[in-house]
Image (cartoon, rainbow over all chains, first blue to last red; front, side, top):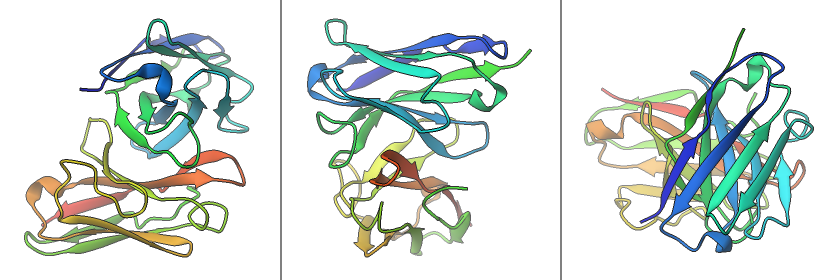
Length: 124
Length: 110
């Protein structure tokens, strides 16, 4: 059974940094792309970043996070990470880790499993 | 403002059917498959329909999806109280090279 467990969320001051982690199990980790999707309080879903199975290809939601966030993965540990810098109030959200149905994180795949999410609150 | 357009809300009575629409453009729905998710309050989204009209294992056949041109639809028949949730459509957008979502549709079972 696929299991995704996010951690690392919490309260951070504006301008601060935070690194989220996602521990994966129950599938061949390196064979699947992974994404981070966030949901602000009371709002809809928003894709943040994706990374291919080997980690050789990454992408970010342009203009919103591309210059501030970095997605990485460690296939030896079945972990994916999201390093977030220069955080602002607009980044306050539950961050979900999602597994893709294929090796890539883009077209011809879909999010087939999700973690329960970790809450990031940016406030002074 | 979401790239994909969904009605904010819809409702139905137990046993009835409802259809939730998702409108996009040639760069997203027009070129790529649409997927649908259900989200209960305080929980993670769950995959309902993938590749426009495919039901993953375990999803009841009360749920069906379709796509035509730059629009897609999720149909739910035989409404049950546990269907009360938020429903989201999503697809890849070739223009912005991002995954885009609809704003979500809140389904109320009266």
